[in-house]
Image (tube, rainbow, N blue to C red):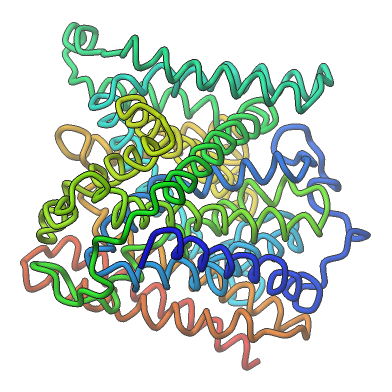
Length: 551
């Protein structure tokens, strides 16, 4: 199998998904209607609820959901062979992941732009809503803590990424002001700012930024100093109007990724390397079984519950027309899936472009790939870019910078989502301080920072990360449950949501049980307890939903 054939097959399925299946979902299942006002039109407060051009909003949604997940997950999962990873990324995206994002977005706009956790209260009762909201908060805190640590490590490891990663912040503010306040031509701005960002990447490779001296003078490690800087930034970023920073930043980052993806796919088509990985490798050394762990190792790119937080958190508050949900929600997810596909091609074919045995070296065992997954992505991607004339050193800088940028935008959005959930809790349970944006942002930042500091070196979030994969997919199942209950109440077709819901809940529950048992046998009673609590929450929420459904 050649890389070009794999790409052709994938994009044929993507085309069917968007032009045929998503149209069916929009017209026959959800009945999108532009005469119905969206929350952005009804509220339009100029801060969180802002009617937005669908292409700018697509950039925000695409960038917010596209963190490090669709890069790291597929890079690890191909150890089980390229075929299972390919099928889950492509078919999973078209029939499950994109449906999940689209359904969460539409369900949210039909409920005033509220989060899926709050909406659940209408269908499963107050207790289920409260437990679900606290589960969402816990996952958001974990995402913030882990991504802060990962970004700080990447800044330390790739100092050439620092300058372009921070350059995008003032550029985004200028872009937002130019579009919304000064009405400057949108296309001209886009071209100019994109060129400046790529100039910033070149400058970053020439002038790498290191904080070792400043960190030492303050008695901190460079990683810890970066963590503090990141949380200080997100405190302000999460409360600023979305049009001033969040929207334009994500839009510009999304354009950068699209340009990079175009060059990666062009390099794969030009070089057309054969796939060096086996089609199926069910028992790699030291790896857990392919089923069910493939389906939680690859989350973003095939299915991710975190996307429901984005869709019903920030995106639903900016949708200008109902029919835009098809482009933003469904197509946005296919964009992320195409990144996961590019990672599969880079790690299974690109790495072997100049070294026939490089794949075997990187994927010798499960323990080996844990530390070499990003190496495989950077090397494989750089090899594909080299095929179209990009110098290898520059290619590695570009890829490393984009990994940092997307991790940073996910953290930025996650803190804002956590603030929204705290605002909703404050409104529902009449805790007035939490209804204030700045107070809620402070609580979000401080709770995430507390988790970071709970372990030496800022690794507090990493302690609980092993349970995140299954918990994240469990959240996807519960988000599908909310959409199913909404469709059921409205008397609309439910099967496009029902069968993914059953499948996802079965796989993730099975994975959570295996994780809990494994942690217990290893003597890791903390993770065993966390896994058990999450399982109990799932069972309670499902029981409440079934009880309400029957009544």
